Image (cartoon, rainbow, N blue to C red; front, side, top):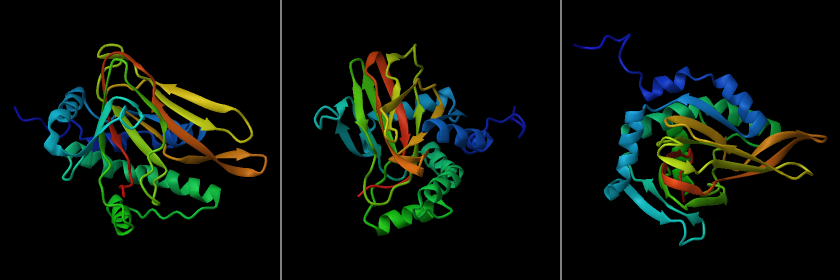
Length: 244
């Protein structure tokens, strides 16, 4: 039996559109990160996670221990991307764009991001940043990711998204997503988040505006992953600027 339009499964693009983006923006402004509703179904999560062993789909593989980034491994997709990855990246960008422009205005910075992801990536490529950045990450028991920023050149989009592909507490334990920000004239503040399968977490790429006694200050932010205690933890990372 053919599913009617009313009963067919929603696409990733439609799930992005259904999120409460004013609430996401408010949470980002408060904490530097914000969760989304389900963006990928469990079956879609498994399908994407299973791509990890198909080396021909990726442009490079990074062993974190080799570079003292932590322990674990990740792979950058090559073009063309899997359909869901391309669809999510294109659908999320315009939802995050108003937040990016608001942050730039508060900090008195240029807002170089055009209305579409394709236009923005054209700017990245013209500036010498042509390498694709969608990424699959895989951690086994004992693996972790050091606090860092995903900066690949001068052109940076101020937010990115990570999506959990496995079930926390069942497929793995530990492995919380970590966000640490240096508040103005104060001790660093940390946030720990358990990623839900198929749900996204929007978080700060480099810095974000925080109100201070002198107005708005740019607060540096780094992210990482706590030690995975057991099992395997896989995630999809969506960065909205390409790499040099």
